[in-house]
Amino acid sequence: MNLTYKTYWRKTGLKKNWGELFLNIVNEHKPKSFLEVGVFCGVTARNVCELLKEIHKSEFKYTGVDLFGEKFSQDEIAPNYLNEQKFSNPLKNLFYNFLLRENLNSYESVKKFLKQFSENVTLIKGNSNVILRNLDLKDIDFVFLDGGHSFETVFEDLNLIYNKISSNRGAVILCDDYEDSSYITGVKKAVDKFVETNKLKLILVQKRFAKIVI
Image 1 (cartoon, rainbow, N blue to C red):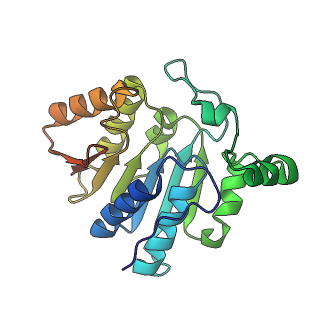
Image 2: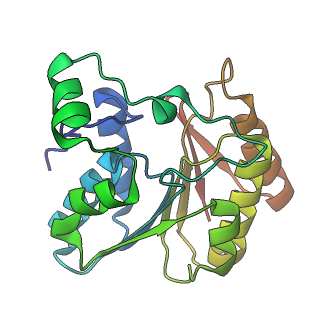
């Protein structure tokens, strides 16, 4: 299967090589019920949905949790790319900011971007530390955790998720930005503490992704 990570002229935290590595990890496990925390502009979500459709036809589910423009908690600092929608490509800047006047991280924009998978996709707006407490995760077999990056947020997200999927043997939690320690030390610290506390095995993938298999 040829796995090409497409950006669809939108912003994404995964550039081409990282995106294709990510898709290969997802393809290896072939999940049927996927949870993404930190949807951003929906690029990863779209790539995942296209991959899972190819594998499972219509028999898959994608759930995405994101603030979609809501205020960050006091533990988090909003990244500049969420505060200011700037593009180095002047055509993108003209198209999104002046013609469409569309905020790519808004709930409405991401929902429209994923509309061809509307039967498979559920998007939830809000703080992940709150949403995950009440969200039914019993069928989730793959989690991509890329939401808030403070120690407090990541550690709480991990525990909330694990408490609900710990009986799903073979389920995967994949954490982004694990080794970006010069900028995001909270992610690594939270993942390390979570793995140690729950006596789980961490698999480091090319010094970026932390994979935890339940």
